[in-house]
Length: 177
Image 1 (cartoon, rainbow, N blue to C red):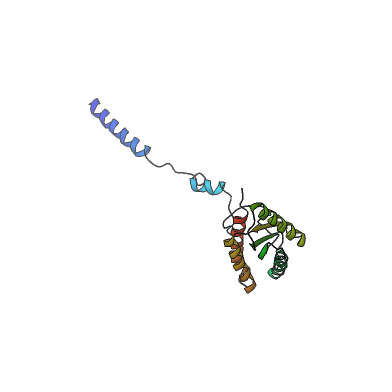
Image 2: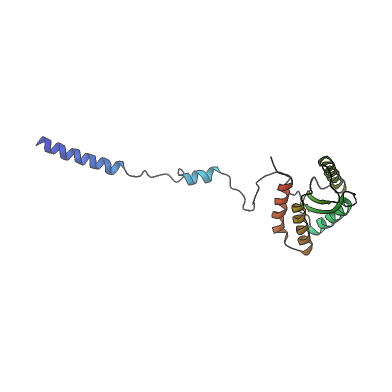
């Protein structure tokens, strides 16, 4: 008789152990993975597209009317083309940054090209004191893109979409380390 009760007790014990031991432990709302990740990671602003750098190189100090920037860019480009090595120049200005695309009238060695780029950079900074950063390129693809953007700005295309294009060109000219 004891053996019969012992077996029933043992089976009931095993059944109850399995029943209560295999249930899912309720989790606190702040303890699950999704909440832990969203609480730890900083929220990025929705307007950041490709890069998330927080330095003044990528952010204009002040917002300037596009008409004023266009006049500055035309003046800078015409002064750059006065150099004998430069056939054509395209300049884009955004905030305190100027992007300069040049087409050369002759082939230059790498040293001469670097010297020309430094001269153009210092020339732009001397002409416009509010420009702190200058990037110069002679890559035909980038110069063509810059020319298209400059034409779009003159035609009155919305600046919002062009800012992304300018950001892409800027990153290709001066990659971050």
